[in-house]
Image 1 (tube, one colour):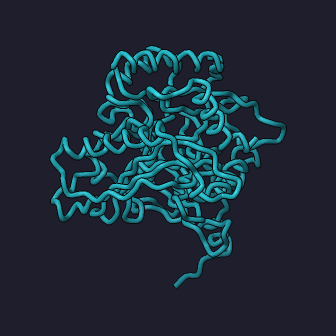
Image 2: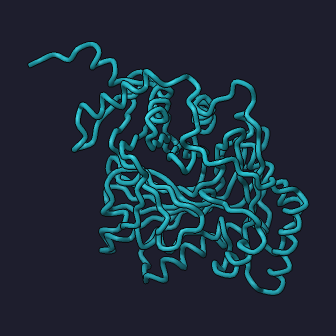
Image 3: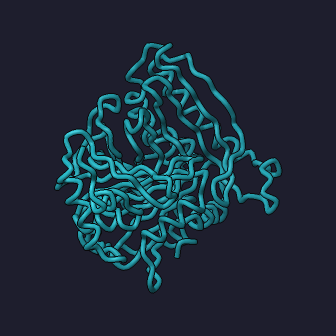
Length: 401
């Protein structure tokens, strides 16, 4: 058997900077992520020239990473980053072993990886980042106004809850680069799903979201999560000291009822509910309830795809009932959320699918980053406090600058 040369061995083990720089240098789509509660990153690179749309069901999808915008009826705007090259951690905590998918030749793999040697330390974003967006950042007064309008609509019984959002732009400090920022992000938030993805002509996004939309393990075990309510973590770090208000308890209960109503629509009664309980996400505490279904026991192999269409957008990011709250946001929010409050995550990778609501996220522009945050408005909301909640949520990513 012919032994591999030292060059072959060397070029099949890379660190994250080399990998992402190589993807950018070759104008390829990529995604790297860390699952909740797991320390190691994994990632993929798509060797195709253009990102692919993926409107198909989760169960039949080839391995990859799916991203969806907030507004995405019928999954028509899903983008799929195919797992042509899979990067799995090596014994060296900072290294990745490169594993080509079936049908990808060694020559294609070597050609991609050799490109990493030509990439600069601070990879150019020009191929990925659309033209600079000139839309002015939302101001405090604008957000206060929309909260007050929302309360008027709640009082008029148009909807029970709505979730307006805002964004703020942060200029890049001298010497800042997003790969170093991502490395810091995945160390800071062990209890979040931490990701970065890049798609040429679409953009580069990164974030640390605490909210699982749904997961499917081994084609059998379905899970979804209701997450709502936000408070600062006590200085002691003791979650038992968090005192939830009636407003926060009711807000979380609305999200639970939303998921249960989705089960009712498909006449699914055999599910397990655990919670609510307080959980930690960065410097914040939330209320969380988990829902489990044995898809084999209920004979519902397509449950993941069916529930995805019913769940998104959830009441935690849009409102309840869905249609009037969505129409309110379209009329008054004043900007395109794009991938913020959409969903994203690995599909059919290593026998499982995890899709997360894209919270605590930012989009990279040519000269600055755009950070997003929102807050749930109910009849008990106080506009000033809702704005303060968005400021607290923005701190998740502000620490990267």
